[in-house]
Image (cartoon, rainbow, N blue to C red; front, side, top):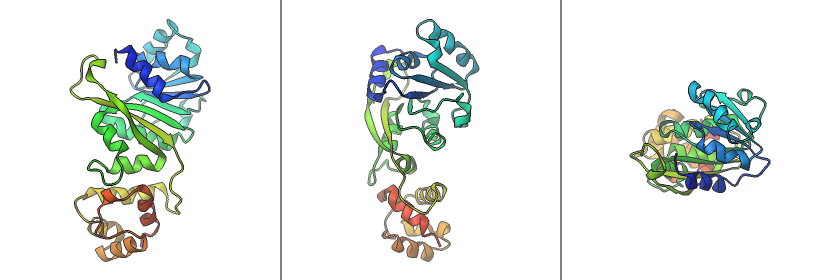
Length: 251
């Protein structure tokens, strides 16, 4: 990312407070990191590339207070709170690699319950999927799972010219504000299992799509009716709360 205006915009839209501890995934050469440091109490940068992870503290030391930065050389898909050197992040701000954006967001929200908010830059189509609501053509597994953790919305487009080299896709900003998951006796894993089953065959009715999950199509229909869901509906019509109701009534 080479456009200073876009970097400043990301920090502004992230709405950080001086008390926030930011986790940044994939800092690369540190253009966003340098802008985050003055806006937060601390930045924990998770970088999988050992060369970049080694260079980032040097880059920061030349321009900012290096003691406000912790660099963790690790795979963001595998981190836990124990990997963050005693820091407890309150905000996620990152320019995420397109191919891992959704799993990184979901993993970080799962393992870092201290996160209260986030702003991520992702491929435009991924931003659409994350922020989609029921009934949208792009509403699917990422939409529902993200909604388990947070209120998710598009926070603006990002043009291709802010990057070097220029990518072949447009980007978008996605805002996340943590909220409590639906009140349910089902676990997150149980709810996500229903979601996966419902969208594995998204053109099928829920009665058919959930047949294997419930045992039989008849079992699926009884469960759906008990949850107040039309068996002829499709997964794209349900919000995360409806999926939770279905999960807790599994035969």
